[in-house]
Image: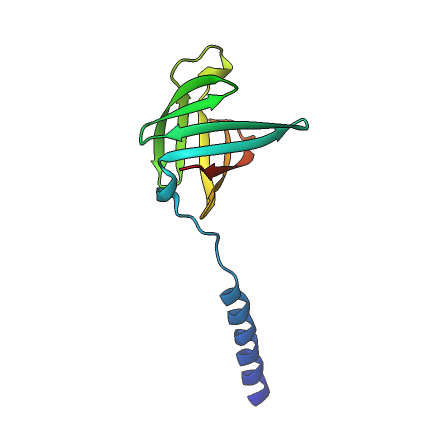
Length: 129
């Protein structure tokens, strides 16, 4: 009986130690609802950079000398949908769902994809101001 009790205590100690060391990623999404950001991605070996400024309900994107505006609709604290305000093609008419996965002092990591499409890509937005 004493051995069974000691085994249970030992097992509980191991579980508490393992779960106590594990922490969820920080997710302070409210800090990134507005601001000036930079997004860097690598596509087929080319590094692409875009800058965007997000306000509460719209976002202005700057990419290769072009400016574009999208509406921002927040679904919850960490997810929102972007819709291009002046689409020039069918693909630009598709809304993009963005979900902030984690945050740190320099920016946030996120996943994104066309709304109602299961394919998701990941990215990181760095705060510029």
